[in-house]
View 1: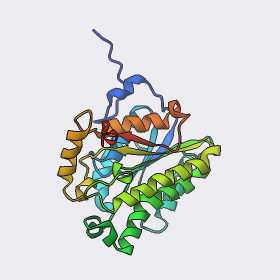
View 2 (view 1 turned 135 degrees about the vertical axis):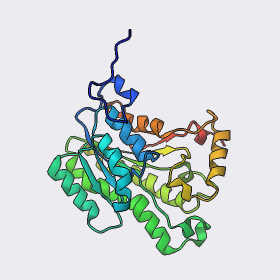
View 3 (view 1 turned 45 degrees about the vertical axis):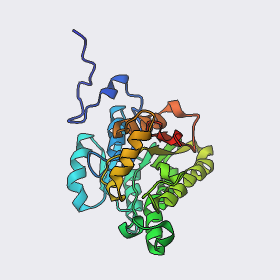
View 4 (view 1 turned 30 degrees about the vertical axis):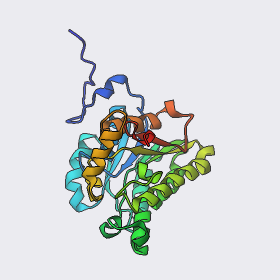
Length: 275
């Protein structure tokens, strides 16, 4: 009979077969922002990071979201579970103060949040309001820059900052609308963060999954058509899943990616290569 190589204390409900490969992230501590439910990209990342041995801090948006997120975070044995709405003044700073007091350092930050007002998102880019565009930039892009600023003094031994983008940042994608320019700004921000913090051993990445059926994606008009198009055009003839995105994020956080920074990493079954 083959020996069972699972951990003696497997994670409740979220034990992952990738934990068989060893604790390549053991000793690393990181913040995962954007877990909304078990289908969210941030959760897929958190599961893989924990499976590879990392210790996590997990945030939830507000009291309404807490009842969905807290059980997931507890199953991941998250050391820190805290609220974070980046639009609430001082809340992001309070979170990093809590991390500083609890851990004193930070090895990685996974930024997986985005937002655009529905009216602006469903209209033409040239018709979007100044207020809607500013709000989308604040939540989806500036918050990443602010997290990089707050994480910098905690990453004394180097670290990784990763955020989530989409193919619509580089090409015009029907119905993606205002989020295209916003994600393009996010990818440019990653490059500048990588350049400015590189000498401190801090690396930055944008991870660009194909379309995924998450709650956030449901706000995009005709999203089912986008999914069908991606499935038909991708060389693999399928969508990726959050576990595949999570494995790539775990690789970027780990030492094997030490020679990389500033890149947009596509995890979309090859879709971005097809005209």
